[in-house]
Image (cartoon, rainbow, N blue to C red; front, side, top):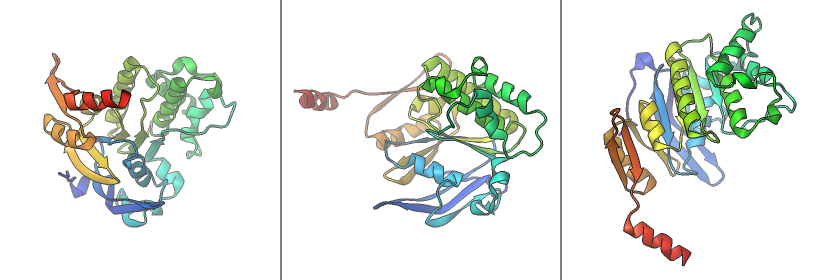
Length: 275
């Protein structure tokens, strides 16, 4: 099942987009994203989730099809103009050694020639990313989880004073403890809501996707196999995606909680492998 977005509200649109990586072809991907949407990309390891995100971000050029951003081909945007409307948090990013965290966050603002509120935005972004206590430190002395928070603050700073933009994040909650994961999910949601930004995130936790997002893009074997709302009706597609049985219940707050079922056949296979 594929969801459709109104022509008048399309922020980014992929039309039969595909790419060759080695001997593998990923695509073709056809989808639309509207301002303000929350979209989670789920799929097994190696399925093509990061490939899809890189095609959306312009990091990779498609071999087939086209990507439109605000009605213009993505390739026709200048990088400074694009950076004022689209921010990316990759799975891993290199930062020059010895940079202070304030400067790393401020890198999100480099496309702006005149930026009188830079330091105010840096501080506000760090606070929203639960990283205010890390300001003034060297980035390369931080733990992986602390670096992730600084990088998220950089994304916040980049589109702080923009509206109807696009945020693309690849596993933004890795290396973080569970409590902080939910705090940052709340921060991303509040930030995007205030500015009507669309948020597209690669996640591995089904429940985080169901709790904090509106739509699921399910990717498997290099294909977009489903585009579904985050409701109970998505569970069969999730079972097919991961090849497991899932149980779903509603908690006291009315939220859907999904857990894998450890079937007897799966347990026997594990026991046999360990024998």
